[in-house]
Length: 199
Image (cartoon, rainbow, N blue to C red; front, side, top):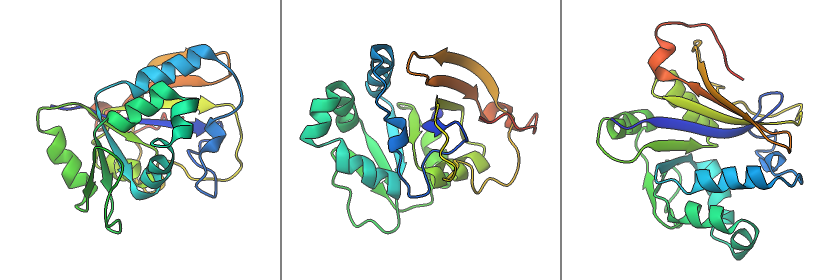
């Protein structure tokens, strides 16, 4: 059975995007070769990337460009080569390479995907999708990079979640630029303990 992973950058006050859907807070000018290598390694995996429309449009507008290839060649290569799924009922087409457009219900579609053999699944950004999959208890692991910045306003990844989920810390790693990586197990423990341990 496939695993479903959520990976996101979040601010110190818990937002994955600011009030204008801008995620650039995560790209601070803080040179850290170790963190850059960590990002490049993550992008080089073979899992299928899942997006909602808003995150997909932001990602597809940047990663295929010459600027992305110049700034972060390894990450750009990985993002462009990996298989991608975008969930949207309004998009007419998905032009980014290796992307499939799905208009079906995300929860039902992901539940079916998880039951099949194949590469693991990873959601990037896409707060609405994360909320739906969390609510359905389908997320196996949450990975967050906590960025040391306070946004004041923004959107959380769990805006439509209506009951608590207990998450279990499995890994932490700090970086010189101030970022902190944390990993939590998700769905397998949600039914047993409903206290909240979200970042």
